[in-house]
Image 1 (tube, helix red, strand yellow):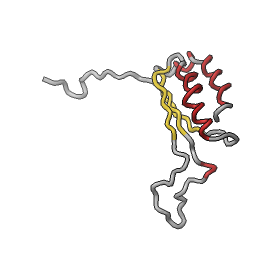
Image 2: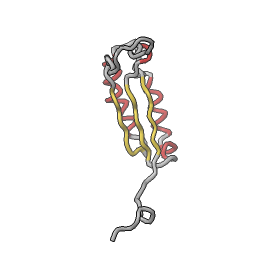
Image 3: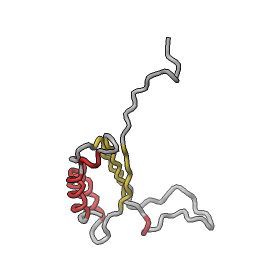
Image 4: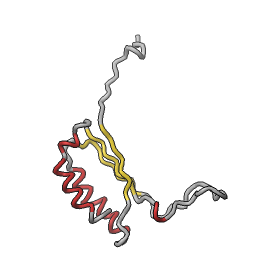
Length: 115
C-alpha cells in the first residue's frame, strides 16, 4: 500500500542556481566572442569546485520575435538591448561558490576577452 503524500519520503537535494545575462563585446566580431565563451571560458567555469552543472544558452544574433507589430507596444528588441546569451550555473550547495574563488578570479580576468 502506498504512503499518503504527506508521509511519503522525498529525496530532495537543495542546491544553489544563478542565471547571468550576457552581452558580447561590440569591438570584435560576435562569433569571436561566442567561440571564446563556448571554448576557453567554459573550461575555466567548468573547473569550479562545487559546480554541479553549467549551461550556456546561445541566443540568435537576429531574432525577429514572435509578437505581431502592435501600435503603441514595443514588439521588436532594440539592438542595444539584445542579449547574446545566458549562463546558468548550479552549485551543489549555497556555500559551494566559496570553494571556487580561485576559478572566479580566473573567470573575471578572462571576461575581458568575451563580454
